[in-house]
Amino acid sequence: MRNIDLNSFRGAYSATFTPYNTNNTINTEMLGKIVDFQLNAGLSGFFVAGSAGESFLLTEAERKTVLDTVIAANCSRGKVIAHIGHISTDAAVRLAKHAEAAGADMISAIGPIFFGSTFDHIHRHYSEIAATTDLPLLLYSMERVHGILQPESYVKLFEIENVIGMKYSGTNFFAMQTLKNMVDRPSLFFSGSDEHCLGALATGVDGCIGTTQNIIPACFVELIRLYSENRNRQAASLQQQINQLIWILLKSEDYSYFKAAMRYIGYDCGNFRKPFKQLTEQEYQQFAEEFDKLEIIRTK
Image: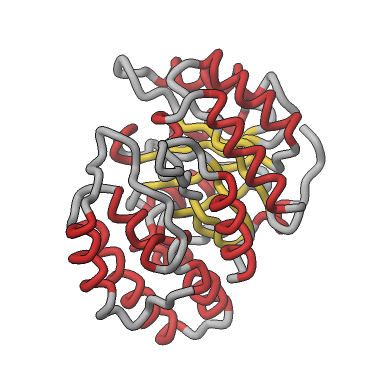
């Protein structure tokens, strides 16, 4: 693994959305605008083609296009973490090789998510990915996919060369903190649960990676700053405002409303691909009326 400065990766990242043109192709122009918007808001970088980026609804070629576009637009201003996770280990390996050749700073991969994978499957999956590249590898643990985090098992994954840390999209921060304490070398841990970001910071994470960071990136940058300055009352107030926005997004139970929020702030990404709901104009207008009431939201 190449030498890296772990501190340079700390901070807030967007789990970047994949925008579409009206014909459902990748809107590379809009993606470039989103990169500029989020960097100008202070984000540390991008988590590209993760679950929020609809990785499993994209072809391999499309995932490569999305990553190439972000890297080109980023111009080395922020860090680019390429999510190369795939149900197929061989496909994940191909995407990892592309990410390294394209100039990504780090790769990440969700563990196997099919056939009730055992820990041996998970270990084999990550070992084969890590062996194909010199890039650092960030594990991706999603609670609703993999269940409750088991520190005693997951610490064994840190024996794999190149494994540098974890994006933890769950809420058992005690388990995450236990795992972090069990790892006997420098590592990076990121929270993926936006509504619990402040609580995660209190357990020692190095930053956050999430969907809401697409919409209000400056708020997460500010949240981390307030916490680092021990301004806990102000940080708690900001987290409460963030959660009011998240509540509106989650109550719909459909991720196309997250992209509706992007349209609201001036960056129309289209809908999520099917089987997600394809919002009508009336549904968008009803959603926009709710967003009008949020003090935290700011239009472009």
